Image 1 (cartoon, rainbow, N blue to C red):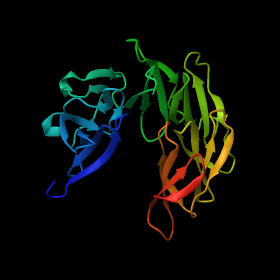
Image 2: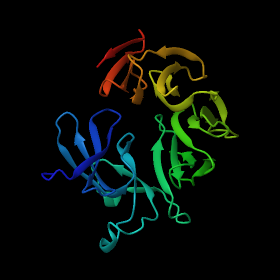
Image 3: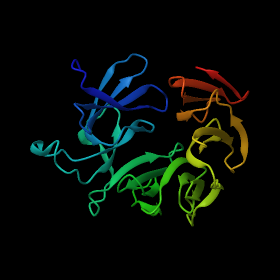
Image 4: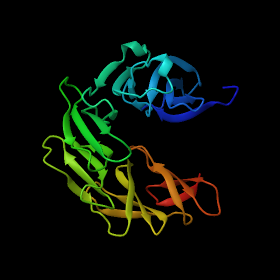
Length: 286
């Protein structure tokens, strides 16, 4: 805005990079509007999604999932309690009124929900939470209109989904692991979690990201971040050399790419973006 009161909250690109969805908040409100741009031209499309909180756009083939609320009473727009968050699917080029309701839970009106689809289009997931810790994962086949089933029951533990691969969901969890571990569960026969990368007694597992056919694992060790390359069976393949001691607030890449990008913060330098070439193992400043 001309007054500088609109903040960019979230950005995500479509799978083919043709479109950019961004969520913007006005005047410090938690309410955001999601809009879509063409990446090649910068043209803003007619799609506008309103009455969204704590959500951006999660893309799939021809649209995206988002979490929204019913339109609130205007008299309580900024003061009323938000209830009954739902997951919707928006097909690009259609009106919000035509969006498909994916999931809602009227018996638990204060829970938060987010939805996403596996890259192969086989599975649909919903992550539920009741606050800043503890979560629950629900799932169903993406091509069947059947009720969601509980895959990982909440809310005693955290479950941070990493990727769905070969009908197995990979999650970072503190279930039986105070410093977190990477585990997976078979969606065709969900009998329980199988450890892929065990908990480290001294290092905190902060995040895992897929990319280039590998898993990129971020640990916090002695107040600094370390990044390692693993295969999907939990075998450590290589260390990612960091140019300096510091923290890595973000990192990742696409599954078919042969490079990852990460930002590094140090005591003596501002946040800097680096590129790691997977085949050669070289790190260069981007």
